[in-house]
Picture 1 (cartoon, rainbow, N blue to C red):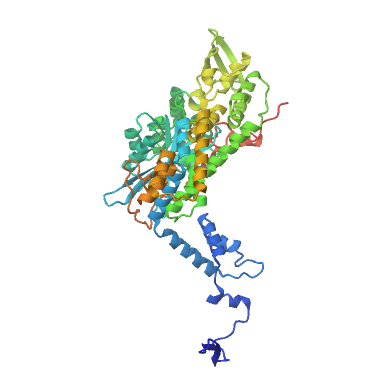
Picture 2 (picture 1 turned 135 degrees about the vertical axis):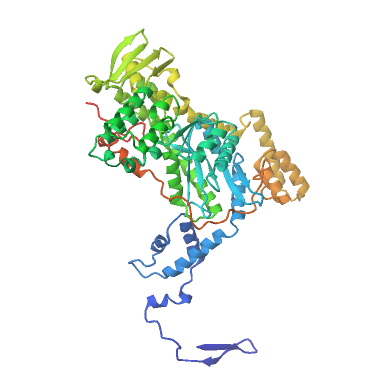
Length: 620
């Protein structure tokens, strides 16, 4: 130990020196790291750790990235030091969570004036529910909000609040998010508030179809708030317990599974579905099985024949909502505070926008190759986006396996799959063709998905039609849907700036502003505010400046008497459903029939909700 003291002339002198150590010396570098003096982390490294943790990188991986405990050169940090830093960062994130959340929402509102956020608070001012939608979400819903899915998930925030996503499908067959909602509970009243608020934000437009799980509370809320919407159950949720409830009858050694899957996948006639169901349960002695009786009782909520006339945009399950939930869980910590959760959800929206932009770019810049060379294919190439064109080509290819059995009255055709011609049980499809207008088929694929089916394409090809009938071109699947969206966005941002007179006025105004900015004349607050009101009538800049000067930090978030919360929900230590709600088991089961064989040939079913068609069979 050495002690230094100062002299009167501001010098130094040694007052005491002890040569012996009062502890054993460290003999290695690994020992030196254990001293607190050797465990300091600089600000740059600490910020890097913060970024990693905010992106849901585990502490173990953070240590690996920093080289702590690796097999290479010795690192200057200990794992305990990194863990302590992560703990302090988590505590900082949780501090003033409500204020940070409101500040973030205010910033998002300033950047996107079209954004809407709604709160539901109790008598004490505690937050019960929160729903928010960006301007892009509203524009997407206006074009693609005819069919949506809604699903909730737990364990994605510090307060264990159920988080619900409104998801649909755009003209590139991608999942598109319309909005997110945080709920306190999954009660009917909470869902009623969520659905009614969502429709209100979207300008009163009701979806034609909504797919959910079998939640009774959701069903009650939909009946009261979405009266003009057709409610359908997710088929995967309905059938996920089949193996558990049916026992040996559902094993791979029994023929029941193959017949059962064929029945629920291919049958489109209600009467035939019910007759075959009774015959199947009798054949395998399942008439008294409670699971099968329940499925049949609620068949109108999930079975294919009862929804062939309802447009679902090709969706049969809540897979898109659950996929979005899974993506969110990958980038956000399970115990994330509210403001961090909102920020990460906003990043997810940005990612989806980038993916959509990529598909728009590919559709514009890459010319689709003709696959079969029939005249109608060229028309599909011109009007459809790249993803929809791929699915059209697949259906067109499958139409080659169909046979026209008869033609009556000039416009009525009976079509059958060639493989069923010599079978005792033959499935026939009736096609009506109104030349120059529309073509309809009894299979109901167009009504269900908005695409011409293989049976109709067989008729069109046989008649050498050059174009898809106008009544069978659904605008939401075309390239024009993307162009319309781009024009609307440009019109919102630009307003009347395309007018030449208005351009001249703005140019003169800009020159005046530059002259004033470069002058030495002072600018009083009243003059500045008056100029801002004149220049930014209804703009976000004027609202932001007035809000800052008046002291109201959240004036735009408080729009339409929207009561701001004063407290966040209480933290819950336990409870909630398991975090893993993915559909891997459903996909694994479905891949054993049909799809598995198709994948070997490089083809994926066009009705698969998110699976791309990567290859196309070669023609010989």
